[in-house]
Length: 296
Image 1 (cartoon, rainbow, N blue to C red):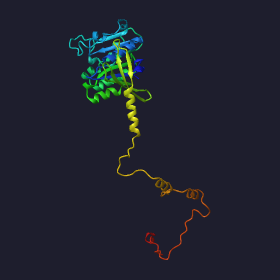
Image 2 (cartoon, helix red, strand yellow):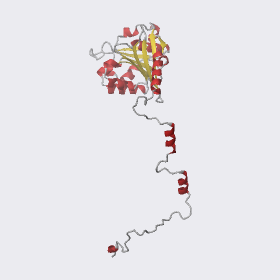
Image 3 (cartoon, rainbow, N blue to C red):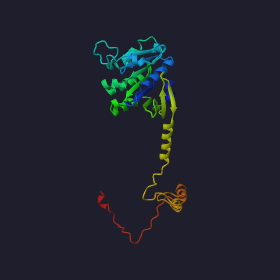
Image 4 (cartoon, one colour):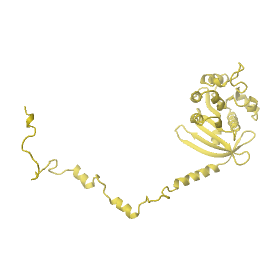
């Protein structure tokens, strides 16, 4: 599934790469930038965490013509009075004007490095509102964001990730440069697909999928859990023997009409609909009218 996402994100898509202090997701972010440039797409990068030189390091010079980096690293809060881009400018209007400054006619892919910096200086509802507006289209075709999960509270991470159409959580692997990617993809129909892959990233930022062993093992464990008998360790028996099951099937439940009774009710014979009453000798019957005092 990671290879499928690298081949292109659908229009209106929003991809979040979640990392932590144990493994950085920036190389994978560069892999998505490289893959988009190879498809001749236009990329706009909001660079908060690293400098422009560090972001371009390792990218082919020929590919950087369609790569527009907006420096928010040197002055992210606008203290110098002449910032290139600040966290407070993260709004639909400012981002649209920023993207339209280039002469490329087709919508661009917006890369945010990183969402964590913006979330530290703007409220989560304001950030989520802007991201939702960007997803609806316009100057931006898709959004890719890097999110450092260990910098935020769980509720903030959950609110932002809820907007994503695709989510990649990266963690260190067992061997060397290997890493584990847990991928969640939501389709427009509402279907959620999940996968877990072991991958490595080469010096040119190409991604190689090594195996899906962890995912297969997780799937096997889930199947075993589904087949487990929940009544195995109970102190009493919940199962019926053959004789008990036969007696249960023969039991006539109260207030359940039999076939004969249904036929009698639906097809009444002659004389039906009359009430026949024979007084008993012990009936307490008063000949006087109990309501004679009401006569006027």
